[in-house]
Image (cartoon, rainbow, N blue to C red; front, side):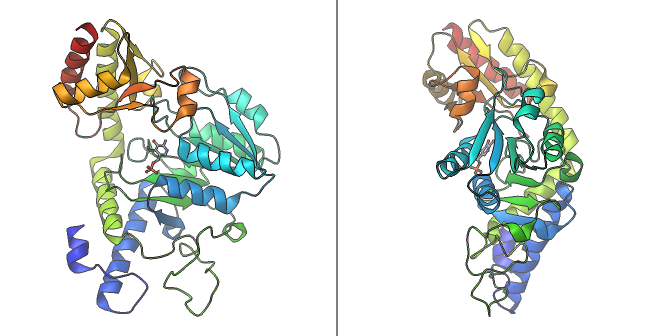
Length: 362
Ligand SMILES: Cc1ncc(COP(=O)(O)O)c(C=O)c1O
């Protein structure tokens, strides 16, 4: 990011001077790094956005019309539920496939709900509340069988689980930069697969792109159709550095480390009286995002004491996902969410277990 500001820092595509060209190179390299990370064939179908929420909104609004049928799940983040609920007010036919108390989706029920003519199935890849991993490849197959497209919210899994968008059958892949990809806040993107008819999509936002400046209409070419205004070059440079770091480390190795930490955490939690852990019991069926409640303690008290007394930072409450908390029975109080990551050590997990044991028993 420092290198971008010192060496580039121009506005890509807006001019022919050296700083503009240097900025364009950094962003194109970032597009290639992101495409390679997720097995996407065409870097020009990688659209950079300020976060995954924008990516999801662009995909949904560009694609859907009133009357279209959309099927989603009972464990979605508000970045999916809110745009869909808004669009339902204008006539979208929205169907929510239920999940059980661990977040698991019944694929037979989903198959019945995704009727022929359904336009889109949209699901998150893993719950941001309790880590439940949804079977993206199987959901994609159900969508395609009915003639629908499949959109994946990979906020919780990009950089955390090995992902090949082509092999999984993901048509619209939305990711955020500041979580598993180790990028800075304010970065993210949308990757459009080959099944997506880009010409049939609306631009959503329209404005300057630096291309086709003679026209007053939005260019049809990608990524310009969906990337308007000055891009966050410094953020995108940081995102590319994060993606390269994660790829050099190896996403399979990251997953193996997180699996071991999750196992250690969940085993330790099970031995603390009064602690309830949500989500799948099998660590292989989840990410490292673990939600808990402590009997007789409010989630705010637990979160505050973890921070104040132990410098352990958690997020408590509803995690922007009231749908999930309704599904698992923790609405409206929510849970305390623990989220070990790349920098977490087994000693950190032990310290967290010690802190929770003291709070639970004290
Ligand atoms: C599953 C899921 N979707 C969407 C989001 C929204 O992410 P962002 O704030 O980067 O748009 C998050 C992050 O909190 C998430 O976990």
